[in-house]
Length: 181
Image (cartoon, rainbow, N blue to C red; front, top):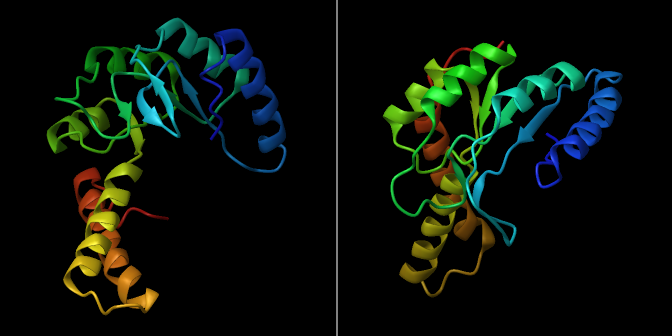
């Protein structure tokens, strides 16, 4: 995954093209982010702006990326209020570009909206925030409920079970159970 979305479009395109050329020569697929996906990630705060469909097409055609993560209303990190994904824009971009779409900032998006995104060409959904939140919640509960625990395995282990629970549920929602080749 190359994220040069914080650069102006032409520079993003040039950086992405170099990465694609390098990766494809080694049999590695490349995902690229385009537009400004809002929210907070690694202390970078951004406003949500929808990706321009013409820039999406140009990015795919000129770089030969394998999948595209266009900004369509999702945010990195926790949502403040209800997510407002651009489903019409998503559908339009999907039909235009001919590569699978990726939804960054998928944590906290209601299941019915995830289903709508999948129906509009989204093939990969990032939900890392949701996974981290579940792990952190369980580890904090473990420590709060047992002030004598010191073995990292007994602290981290329950958190790992929480991760498995979230991942299994997301696989069910995404409809990907039993589809790995």
